Image 1 (cartoon, rainbow, N blue to C red):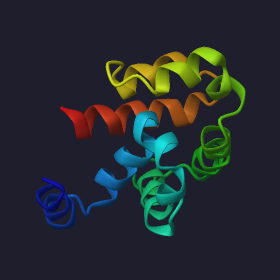
Image 2: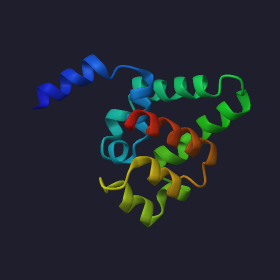
Image 3: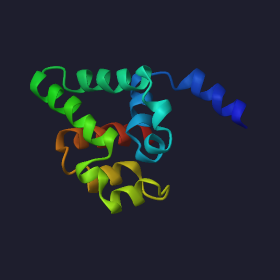
Image 4: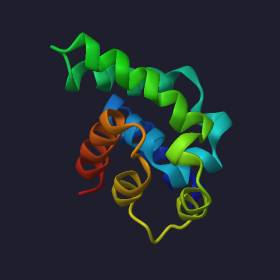
Length: 120
């Protein structure tokens, strides 16, 4: 089964949008943090920021700065509830962001947009 999953990942999920969706999904990110900190995933998120907000340098800078809160699990991302719920596969990733991305409002908006696109 893992060969099938790997083949699909390698053949179909190469776009920055898919990689950003994987990176921004807290269930996958925090369980696979070392793997997802690879340049290819971080670059995909930054590329999506540039594409979504191509005409707003200030917002791009703000969102990239807010990524530190998410990656470090601090502020609203570090509450006991956020930590517990990011491990729960029943909670849809976009809903997790809506509830726990409150200290990174701009990143939250983009994450919800991306996660709703890649999961629908």
